[in-house]
Image (tube, rainbow, N blue to C red):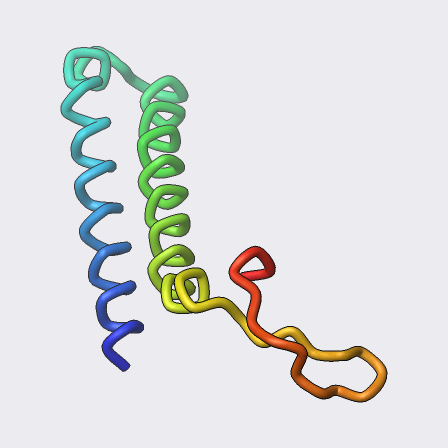
Length: 88
């Protein structure tokens, strides 16, 4: 449960920070934009905010598996062969 809460919090905060950061960086362009240009600029900032949040969410959800590795099983017998960090 802690991993889920941490991952969700990090993803949410990162989406807000990236979204607001991009909007602040494009502040003068956003003020002057109207119509379809404004829609495109808003979509641009939203896309990168969501993409960053998705990446961080996946990374922090799988962080334990990346550090400790995952079980590698024999495909015929299903017996564990060991743990692999590369497979994670």
